[in-house]
Length: 141
Length: 248
Image 1 (cartoon, each protein chain N blue to C red):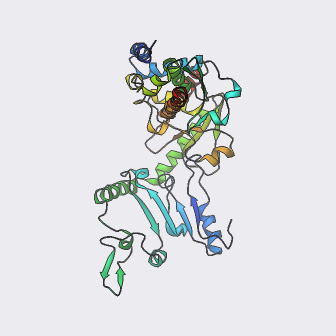
Image 2 (cartoon, rainbow over the protein chains, first blue to last red):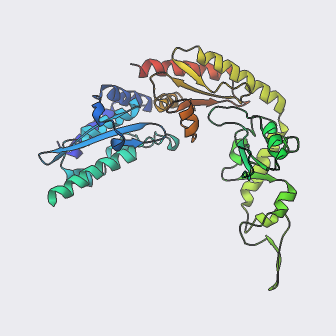
Image 3 (cartoon, chains in turn brown, cyan):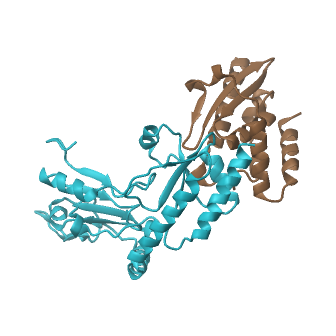
């Protein structure tokens, strides 16, 4: 499925919940189900450090597609990772670079995270796009 | 730390991450014995304690308006007159000069010499109102109530399995910082958000303190005179629910 189709399906899932509290619980459930990242990838060079939580992001390419695996010490952030991986992992690097991930605003993720709890969602997306950009330029070179 | 190289001692009155009230009066006395001036950051302490700059004998003291019912982006810097008079202005502009001649520019008196340009008039008036309000309440009674709330919260929270209080100094402001075994502070904070409970989470910009306790961050609740014992019960119940949900 394309990034847009995957985003649409996430937005539909979230429409089942009226309250932010229910959406929070759903994201926590996604986080609890996220497969753990192999310890060998939990190294400083893969770490996106934040005040509230840390994220380890591992990217690799296979047959011209980009794949992501990640982990965090926060279950909520793991839930966000699960959503991002669902949408971005296995996609074409150019599509990853070009997407503006409209689903994040559509499911209310940004509005409900207080500035003081900025949890690195933006840095996570940036890092994923940077990996894709690097792999994309490597391929076109 | 008080060596011949020490120019200034800067110390927080009350720790934002732990609530510890530092023995600033003793610190000031020791520094003054060596003629070292002391700056006190009272941003956290101003609302939880009655602070008397003359009794402390501090040389400088500052606090933010928004910590005492006043607008954001404005605050107070107190300094002893003789020090302020000896200090050069840090910025030029209108109202800070008393006369300008080619031979000599004379600066205005304190505090004007430090207040270059058009001041933030509206917020000054706002802070005046905030401070007047704060001065009008029974501060002794307010602080006693806060102390009782702190004791109650510490008892209730530490009774929950897996909860560990961080910062248990004898002299403490009504701030309770805690961690929960196996849980990330932000996850708990965000869950409490959904219940309408406001706490702060993370490192509170004090990473060395967090490193000292070997923790990645804390959940921090703070209480003021308008808080109630029932609200602490709500917090305690919220924490229990968070543990149940997050531990799955």
